[in-house]
Image (cartoon, rainbow, N blue to C red; front, side, top):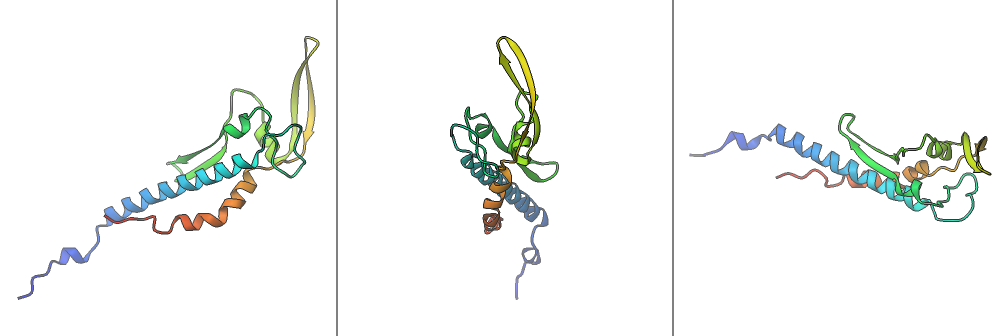
Length: 146
């Protein structure tokens, strides 16, 4: 007589879906961390401004230190980029894409504002481009059974 359990021939669909979801969150978070690190390391601490087309130079370190990433559960994606601080400035966007912005200076006790045109000094796009070839390898062996 042959004793066989039919149940063992099928897989538990819920368990597989949970394992894939867990792996996706882990891989996307890891990808976000890699892109964030590439963007941060591209911004060097230097005096003066960077030449157009290359990543901006850091003077204080706010832009470099506030490049963050986060997993968005609603859209099942990861968001990487500079955090908006308490200032009403568009500096990260203008640095990445170029454009005009208002510079405010205090000179002789007076507030002086002027519009300046800034040419693009991208840092997020090149970081994604640098890390893009490595992203598919993150999926290898990411779904684990148990």
